[in-house]
Amino acid sequence: MTAVDYRESGAPTATLGPVSQASPSNTNSNDAWPRALAGKFLVFEGPDGSGKSTQMKRLTEACQAVGVQVTTVREPGGTSVGEQIRSVLLDPSSEMTLHCEMLLYMASRAQLVEETVRPALASGHLVIADRFLTSTFAYQGAGGGLLAEDIKAVGRVATLGLSPDLVLIYYVDVDTATARTRGVPATTGKKKSATAEALRGVTLFDDRIERRSDEFRRRVHESYLAQAKADPAHHELLDAKGNAEQVWDLTARALCARFTKP
Ligand code: TYD
Image (cartoon, rainbow, N blue to C red; front, side):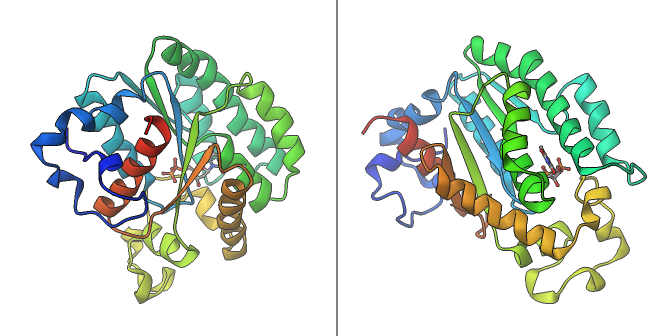
């Protein structure tokens, strides 16, 4: 187990050393917060380039190390039919309306919830989802212009009414996020300075979705902030601008504060 016990380490926002510096004396209490996540549903969210995938992997390892069974899923995708839907969404030649796009994300989600998420939670697994409904509000809602009430209505059907225990939002400013997705440092500029190879990627963002405008991205970023502000009980807004170790430190502190009793 590599994480420190954040309850004994000062206020949640204090700066700590790397989590790997935990002393052996607090090993047992270190186990408390990952153990407390068994049976919970966590969603990792953030604009493209937020670095959330690295944090998901780290949390998965921390929980498995203390015997918590973890099911990780990604959206769109995560099931056989969901992966087929993903490839339709990924295909740069897929011409579709915004409503069609939203419904495809929701169709993938419906299959995922019923086939994987619900059964895993019922078995006491921690379920970690790479994106969920928050993304649809951010991208197709704020970004694309679909009505939030429409997304909410379809979302209620797609999720079977299931909502996460906590949505972790990894937030970075637009310029940093854009630079990260293109493999160039924020200070050295944007698309034109990156190599063609760096621009070709394996994510949806790098394919069809990458073509979206800066204005679209700005609205997506703002939506993440607004969603976190509107419902702080179910959203944790994390500053994802630091390195992976610093962001993991924030992640572990937040989860410890939320899921273990003081
Ligand atoms: P992906 O390649 O999975 O990358 P990552 O999640 O690591 O950023 O890309 C997923 C893309 O799909 C991302 O640009 C956000 C978008 N998306 C939506 O537009 N709406 C949704 O409901 C979901 C789940 C994702």
